[in-house]
Image (cartoon, rainbow, N blue to C red; front, side, top):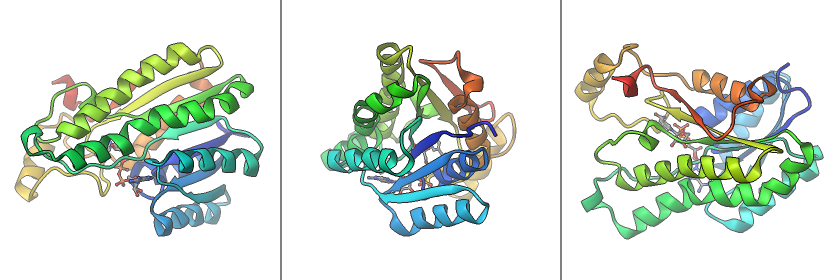
Length: 246
Ligand SMILES: NC(=O)c1ccc[n+]([C@@H]2O[C@H](COP(=O)([O-])OP(=O)(O)OC[C@H]3O[C@@H](n4cnc5c(N)ncnc54)[C@H](O)[C@@H]3O)[C@@H](O)[C@H]2O)c1
């Protein structure tokens, strides 16, 4: 059991990568706090974890609200007597080119996708620090490192997530490691590659000739969050089927 005795919060765990990671972390012995704005999806994740004999609880959380983030961290500490892993994974955007991005879209994209990475870290750090081996794991994106047209606000947010990963890693070392995962196209409700023809063309362009699975991202998250990655901080790992290496 690679996360035996650990307590993990995962935001955006009602779906996709967050749900797969909640299931994987619990299989490896973690007690998981599933935090999401989607109540039905969050409860379904908890049911999936408990059906497999794991431990998880759900807390309704809008990561754009400071009070919700504080409640989420307090709930985790009160329920499971501490906190070892904070996985900032929730996101929101409406994919638009820069010149077609509204102020509301820009603001909400950053409020959900970037700001909580800083704010949840600020709230959780005192708890993570007392463990001596705390981990903040941020879901960045290939959008953090390469330009992709049509996603201006999301791209800005994900660039910020990666920069913040480096800044926090330096400020919170040595008691807390801060690491990121940078997925490419992963098969979740969020994967927006376009119509069927655009999708086919994109898949054909990938060195590994297929889209990634959430469970594959969860395996990477598990490694980075575990003590096996104890010498990794301030950096991220790309998981994109070879897309960004071309
Ligand atoms: N799927 C991909 O191709 C891909 C690629 C790169 C990065 N990512 C990143 O992976 C992460 C997970 O995305 P996914 O693909 O699993 O998407 P998803 O849509 O399956 O899950 C996103 C989750 O975030 C939650 N959420 C949205 N707004 C929220 C809010 N205000 N407060 C709390 N929760 C909120 C949603 O309810 C949902 O459960 C995101 O950070 C995303 O940017 C995904």
